[in-house]
Length: 150
Image (cartoon, rainbow, N blue to C red; front, side, top):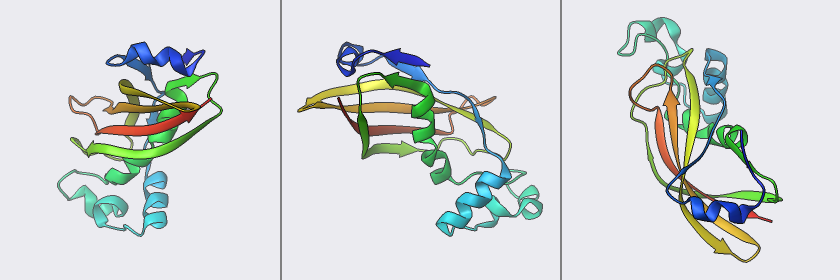
């Protein structure tokens, strides 16, 4: 994990990669729990037998499940020692270029797009590319906007 002593240390890093998360596996239990939490029980996600005959050859994770893993990826991707609190401010752009088949492994790559100083902190716009192990295409590319306070 990449560590930064101070939030302000990120300001000169705009345009550069600031961290890479640990890998995480997307198993059927995680997919099923996400379906239960969101009410999205489409067969391509929760019916392994039917999905085996479908277009992906297996169940796939919901796109929003992949997106919901961003906080976990951020947590293992980089740390800023003087930040006492961070809040999700939103997303600018989200795409899902490749499906995430059950059993796949994912990790996040973080590139700082913008550093906007705020009173008591900064607003960070970070491009998160969710790498799909063994795939030329990422599972997700999103611009995440967060506010970090020192």
